[in-house]
Amino acid sequence: MAERTPASVSGDRRIGEFSFREHLELIRKRPGMYGLDGSYGGYVTYLHGYDAGTRDSALLGFREWLLLKLGHHSSFVWSRLVTELVLPEASPGRGYRDLDEKQNSVVVDALFQLLGQFLHDRDAERDGLRNIFRDYALHFRE
Figure 1: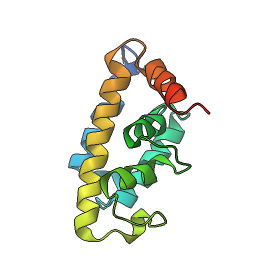
Figure 2: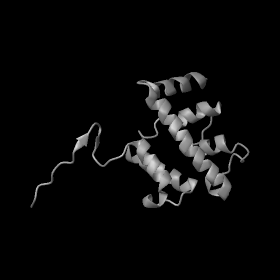
Figure 3: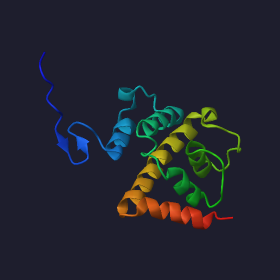
Figure 4: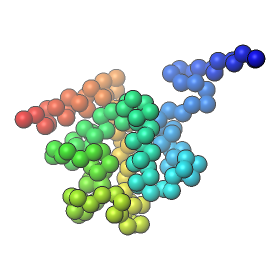
């Protein structure tokens, strides 16, 4: 039996692996390669699974960052907060499964813009994530 050669490692990842930012760009440009249909619901499901696979570290702080953008507290998950930010006219109970084609396109575009902004804020400084949680705690303290 041949021995397996360990994968080359570059920084914090193996050669051939993608950063979360790179992965987002890939699923956005070529959703079909990842079993996605390009719908907001498909991306949400995929991203929840991706986040779970990273032990909830990929999207850590995203919900809190969105709540700071909204300016008010909510018990909704991040996927609903995105639709609330982008489609404020939608009724509170309306989920992403009820989006028409145009709304879906708008929300998908916004999702990737918001994720890009969030990752920039989170990763721009050494304490970016800590700052998001600090700002959240200060804004929403009771």
